[in-house]
Structures are given as C-alpha cells and as structure tokens.
Length: 405
Image 1 (tube, helix red, strand yellow):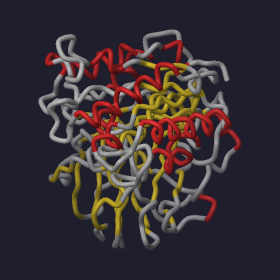
Image 2 (cartoon, rainbow, N blue to C red):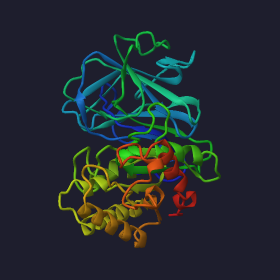
Image 3 (spheres, one colour):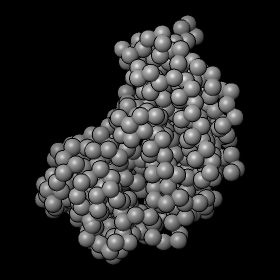
Image 4 (cartoon, rainbow, N blue to C red):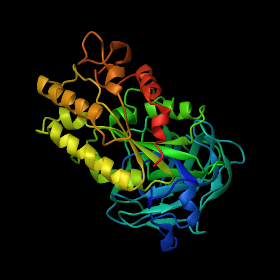
C-alpha cells in the first residue's frame, strides 16, 4: 500500500478505496514510517477513483471485514483523486456488535503521529499510528471518521457490497448507532487496514480484478465475493499466505483507464506497495474485450507480460486466471469470443506466470462453453452468483500462492 514491503511482518488485513487529509506531521502521509512496516500484512482493498463530491461536516461509519488477525492495527486513508487537501477528524476504530453499533468498550481513537487529526495533500495517503492489542480474523471492523471541511472530488469505492453508515455531527466516538441513521453502499476515504500477525512468515495475496472480483451479484453484507471465500479457506489451511487483499474494481481493464485506472497503471500502488504482499492473483481483461475498442489478444498478452515482469522484479509471485465465458451479456459477439479464446490459450501455455488458474473451465457450461454454467449464473450471464464465487475460490491451488520467490 505504501512502499514495497518485504516478506515477513505486517500483512494487509483488509482493503478498500479512500480519501484522506492532514493536520498532522508530514511524516503521517506517504509510506509507512516505521521499519517494522516491512512485517505488516493487509486485509482490505479497492479502487482509487473520483467518488462524488466531499461533504463538509459529514460523518462516515464504515464496516470492513478482515481476512487475517494480528496486533497493532493500522489504517490507511487516501486522497488519491482529490484536488485539494482534506482533513479527517475524530477517527475511531473498533469491532462491530450489530448494524452501526460497536462492541462495548471497543471504540478507540485513531491518531496520526500522535495527533487526533490528519490532512492528506491531494494525491497522497496517510497511515495511522498502530492501535495496540489483538484484532481477530474474520471480524467486522468499524472505522468512523468526520470530514470537517471536505469539498471537491472524493476518492472511494463505489460498489462495496457492504452496508455502511453516515451521519451529521460529532458522533464518531460513540459506540451507539443511534446517530448513524443513513446507509451507504460505498466506502469513503478508507483505503487499507494492516496488522502484525503472530507468525512473521504470514503473507498476503492481492487479487487484481474487475467486477467479478469486486463481488457484483454476490449477496450484499454476507462477504461472499470469491476473495472472501478464498480468505476463509486459507484460514483453515497450513499455508503461510493468509491475508487476502481484494483490489477488484467494477469495469476495470488491463490496458485502458476507465472505471478507475487500468491494471497496468495501478499495479505499483494497489499491489506492489502493499504490506506483506507475497503473491499477485491477476483476473482481468473481460472488460478490455467486450468494450470493442479493437484490443487484440496480442495486445492483452503484452499487458499480461508487463504486469508479470514488474511483479517478478519486485519479488512477487504471479498467478493468472483465464477469462470466463459471457455469451448472453449484451456486449458479447463472435469477435469478442474469438479474442477471449485466444487470450485463454495464451494464458494456459505461457511461462510468464508462476501458475495459471483456469476459471474458464470452472465457470463454462459443458453444453455451450461460450456461456456461464446456469447453476453459477448470477443472472446477467457474466457475473457468478454466490455458488459460482465459492467455486472460483475453491479452484485456486493454495500451493500456487507460495511460489518461493
């Protein structure tokens, strides 16, 4: 998430997308300031893109499901698409009881270089100070904040597949949900959560993807995106890769900016700079194909190779996934299908990756391999339902996530 961080130590515990601000020392913005940051692992993820307009005096209470447990929780906020500095105040974090209510005695103030507020310049990020104590895996973390003077573009994650809450006034320190009466399906200003796992060998896999990875058509509030299923699976196994960072953006492409920056453009920020990243899992390019922009299989192969080269140069393993079928989606046609088949042929035979997971084989119908299996179809002939999401997670070879680079 900020600066390339080596194996062992901190790990991402959850990922989203966000916007932040500054009244703290300058060191609060940018890379993790402590050397121990090399040993963190991260949980949460999402896109950085303009997300409406910031609202002065608005309060946000956001719910984030963690993938891996640990101590010394830190939260990162970003102003990636802001056009001016933005101040965050009253930031608190704790575990959820129900709805917008926190567990008793657990809503704790978050500081930045010891200060209760932080202002992040436009285009920058800010990590909080560590919150001492243990934080469990598979829990709902609640991050509350207030934006006293917000204006201009706000960065965030539009399709969170998670209900969060908004309110007016200074209520971020309260455990009660009484003043958090409105809901939002987005994450605002919040970018990442990292913890220090008990086992310093624990690492994270970052999933770089589009709306299928983002969880579209999975059940809201139940954490049934395929990376969620993968995180629960990894938690029961002996693998050292435990953290799962979901960097899916609905509409994202490998080659061209559009719904957020392209995979090529956001690779360093969203993947290679994350605490404890061990493996990149790349599942993209259906949006490049169905957009009918003239993108060829050779163009996409070059994009895949560039991503693999840069990840390998950073010491990160790369697992690529084949593209699932989408006949029946309005943008499908035989020309797009031909490109999809050619890209999948390239992926299956390429030596550019440490492993390839054949999601196409999992999702396609045996009666018509250009279509998603009806049992897995979320209803639009492109996105899997909860059963399909689970099948994707179960298809990932856990050994492939630990290539030993």
